[in-house]
Length: 146
Image (tube, rainbow, N blue to C red; front, top):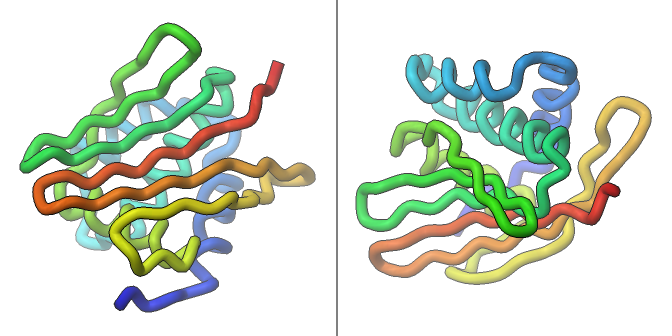
């Protein structure tokens, strides 16, 4: 059973606020290439930056997948995908655990809407998580921002 920490939702929004207006892609690469000793901080930072980058690109979906030991992160527009530098396995695992805690998901598969407050605005995204024996996926779907 996951430990539900309502502060993780707040910490994720604070991380987004902290990095608003920065170079999201470059900072994601730094987090992926040089993780710190604090896996939770790195996971919140990576997820916040990936969400901000997806919003900035006006993309439809952020997808983080682990199949066996290979981790991929993509941002999907309607017809094209952009690959991001994936986090380490420890950061990926913590990131999934954080999102499971935020949406209160104990089952292997499920999803819920999630509202993120960003400065003086908010956005509602659809979060879906799925876990099997050799695969784990987190998808965050964004509303049409055009």
